[in-house]
Image (tube, rainbow, N blue to C red; front, side, top):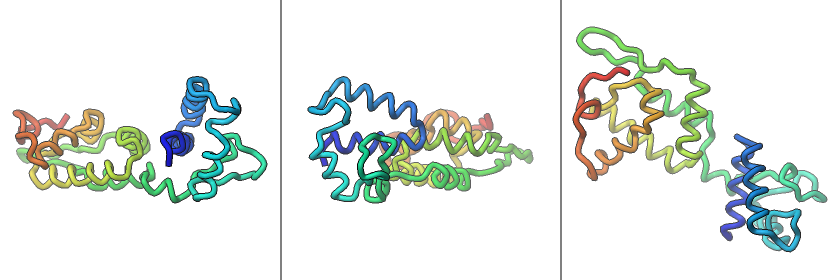
Length: 183
């Protein structure tokens, strides 16, 4: 698969989540890298190769525009579903943390908004999602989760935890070392 073919499939996948942005990026790409047929994203041979190999299909066999294209399972298996990924993370995250006899709620964020932001943070990448879940499991087992799910997400705290989990960094003073945060 060429870079251009992968990019087309990736943008078609992105179209499911933000159609306007994906179409804008396709137009910019076509302008920067014109093909022999300015209407198409790539040459006919590369385009037909993706269909022949099962990476995408046409809804209407006579049209080649992006609204007529559907990516196949052969490509989508490298991505994780937004709803599924968000739920897996959400379900693992501690709902309440107790400190000094007081309970602190950790999930004070709209779940649908969380799913959307989480999927965007991991760029829909299945492998990254699996690593994030390992990071979260590690953080929970070491009592490193001290803040609300929204803060954990927006700061991409799993990246710091991953460094500790993989032994490339030591815990920093503060939240990761176990001090109270609850923010």
